[in-house]
Image 1 (cartoon, rainbow, N blue to C red):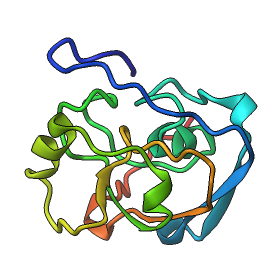
Image 2: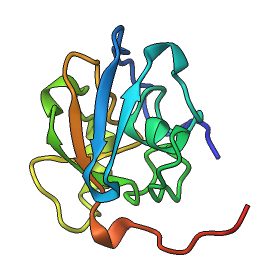
Image 3: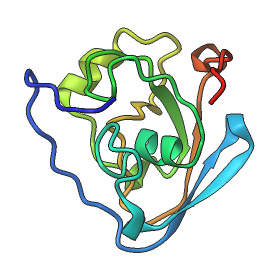
Length: 135
């Protein structure tokens, strides 16, 4: 599921030009991001942490389909936050509804690293969907 939210302003982000890594602490996985592969799943902003996670088989709940209409894709960016785009007011409004907020909280559908440094993220335990459908 992907699309655009007609009620928010479209965001312009700087996509990475070089390879970098995202470590998903809660999954125990490191993903090397190849900028030529962006977008992966077309969910969230192109190059967003959600887009990259889904494109690499890492599940992050995203009830609204990555269009900034919920807070289910809330993550903590433990390292590399400086390389990510600034959160918009719309993203901050949605984050206000998420539990366990911290200064490192972002919506994974809107958080786009620029590739200047590696990134470490944690999907909070309460935000992991443990029910999986078989393919």
